Image 1 (cartoon, rainbow, N blue to C red):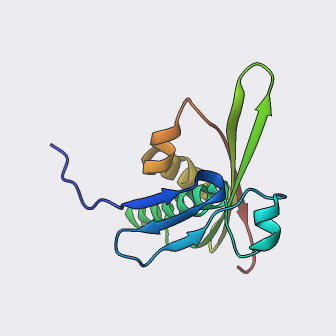
Image 2 (cartoon, rainbow, N blue to C red):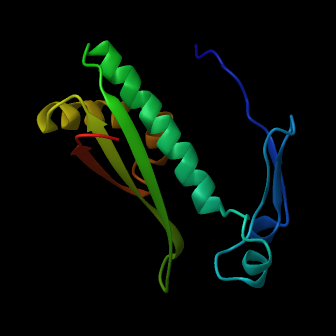
Length: 144
């Protein structure tokens, strides 16, 4: 039986042109679609795709760090999350995700293995598997 670790609660009012506030008040952001009048009035506003990109990148990097620790292959990492919103005639709206995984202290083959393992264990990856297209770009770099 799974043990619940915690529940995050955020209330959104106004949808893509509104606000999002966490139950504890630590997270409070304006939301606006890029290119709209509200986005121009509130340049600090975010959008759901940025929020999803941040959450997925953070979760994926944590999964990657966990996998590298289990494999006794410590690496320094950084994950860049790109979430794109598409609209087409047949399917309506859909998302596409691209994660760029930068790492130093390893080789390309090892990084690709660790990224694959992280993709299998990351809760975000599991949640969207077979529903949202995800591309992974592991890159070995000299510095982050």
